[in-house]
Image 1 (cartoon, rainbow, N blue to C red):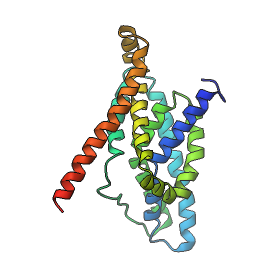
Image 2: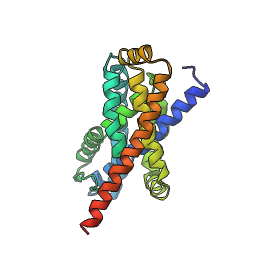
Image 3: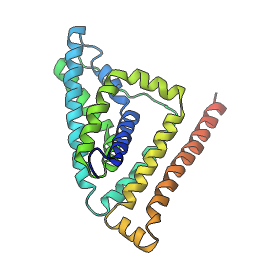
Length: 230
């Protein structure tokens, strides 16, 4: 992939969108962890904690990009990404619970550990959508993290007001999962070799549509059950 090409910017846009869709919990984690600190320490905790969390997640993502070059792992990663995509369309049942800390070091540690634990889906999606480009991963993080931290409330309101953003994001994750499977060194080669070069695009479209349809069906079933119990 050539730098500054149309394909490069399309991939970068995809990474930023995935970061925004899957990284919304970051600001919640930061706010809850720093909740009991005095005001003059909160800003320091936010800056240090966010920097540490971003660094850890960046290292995790770069490691995942490298691991996805191993035969079969990229296909497995694509399969793991499918339920994550469906979950994106599910109604929220519980909010993330992070114990607030009363010390600066404790709050920073809480932010970094909680963010790393909650960011596995983000890491997998970004690694799969990066097409093996470390530059794309770094640029995506540099652009999206300040937006997430500074505008998470606005992002949440936009998603509530325009639900199609979530559906587009879920479909994008399904497309990414299909791309990961189709580009696996072994599975992808066998798929295109036995069926044809069009198999990769067909798989991506099918999984993108399938994720949205399954997500809608499961969401409708959950909301129906919830209404029956009210």
